[in-house]
Amino acid sequence: MKIKLVCIGKTGKNFLIEGENEYLGRLKHYVPVERIEIPDIKNTKKLTFDQIKELEGKEILSKVNPGEQLILLDERGKMHSSVEFSQFIQQKFNQGGHGLVFVIGGAYGFSDEVYKACSAKISLSKMTFSHQMIRMIFFEQVYRAMTILRGEPYHHE
Image 1: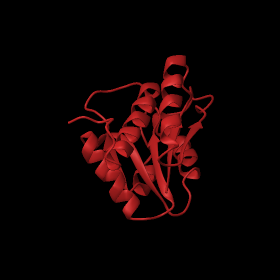
Image 2: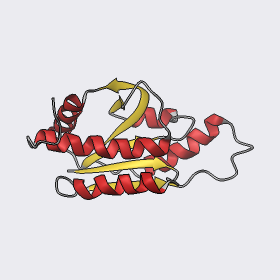
Image 3: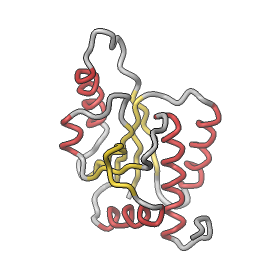
């Protein structure tokens, strides 16, 4: 089973890139993980928010292969503790398929088509984080989940 994180735009802060790469390096011992960056839509000044979401949505859905489960990181999604998140990932792995595709949307959210295609929505916090920061936080939480599932001492209760 593979985990992909699809995100709109690039991270411009070196400390966040270093943090992402740290956890991606750690994760390779547990599960294949891929980070997919979709470039920001160009020339958006004449577009409505809905048009931007539609264009981003087409790009997002083009990154999801048949048999993969689409999971949105969404402010209205279900919140989990770290242990619950590890159980969520284990449950998704147990359901089978070719992989899990988590998505961090653009500034205006997701298109209706993306919402219709998803199998779950999760929220990492009631707080709002920048799209750049949430990527590193997400990879850390996936790493934490893997160590919880293996009974390793990274997570403390």
